[in-house]
Length: 155
Length: 155
DNA sequence: CTAACATAGTGGACGCATCATCTATTCCGC
DNA sequence: GCGGAATAGATGATGCGTCCACTATGTTAG
Image (cartoon, rainbow over all chains, first blue to last red; front, side, top):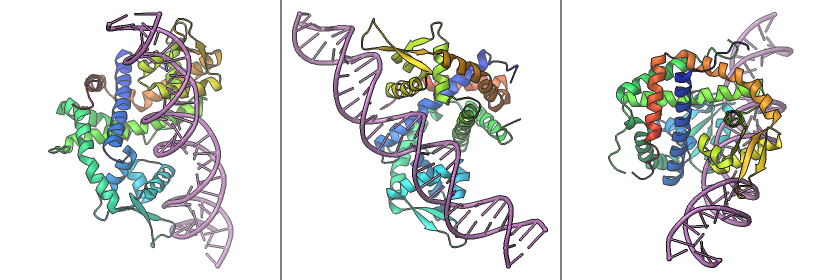
């Protein structure tokens, strides 16, 4: 654990600014969603993933992988969403351990109502403030970081 | 709320990748801190801010501003940290509504113990995976986004 | 076949974050 | 001064997220 070079000025600046930006953006998006719809940001993300499928349903573990969530988190969250009627759980006959999450009509309606406002916020807060080149660099950088992350934890 | 242009391919790619990266990084950092020290990531951030001051203390509202936290969050968090002996609250004589948060010896020790591992993780996960140019673009972009954010909420 | 192991999902406990509300103090216009 | 507005902070309720332990089903090696 010795010889850890501290962040230099440019590194610190990028790291801090990014952290700060992320915190602020997530906060605003959450607030916007809460104000303009009955959905939280996690609700939104789950519903988007489900409605991307033609049948509007997914196995829990599949959804976990696609969102990058832990299974426990998803289980808890889906339970809460099911209590509010946004999704329902459907047992899986092929694998009797498993279950599907499926959007309900209500969930469908809510996501359709919430999406434009959310996209608008994402544009106004983030996308429209940056140039295509900047977005490109960011995409590449983020993908690089993500790719390097699987082989982490005890290098 | 009409005419919201959806994100195009490049925009979506950048936005998604960034969101995903942020989620993964924060998760890893939190895990690393929890495993190698007794601090959570929020604990760490608070202690860093305090130990940056020569006197190791700050007014709560000042700390709020510097971290970008809401006052309620900070109040709750400081209470928990004080319960664990990492900081203590000191009443402010100049403004009798107010209070200082001050690092304790224990807090000092814990942050010093935790910092190298944390910086190392930040390097390995993020900083060292990117070029200086990429870090620069990211810093500029994030600062631009942040600057545009104060004048938001009902454009 | 069966014992060991892996996988899918659940559930409780606990710390964290937000919202709304509340108290105490200070600031400011008149 | 004084009364109303702004500010500093605390607090309770609630939803969220992680860790850990657990059940149930499926998979595989011997």
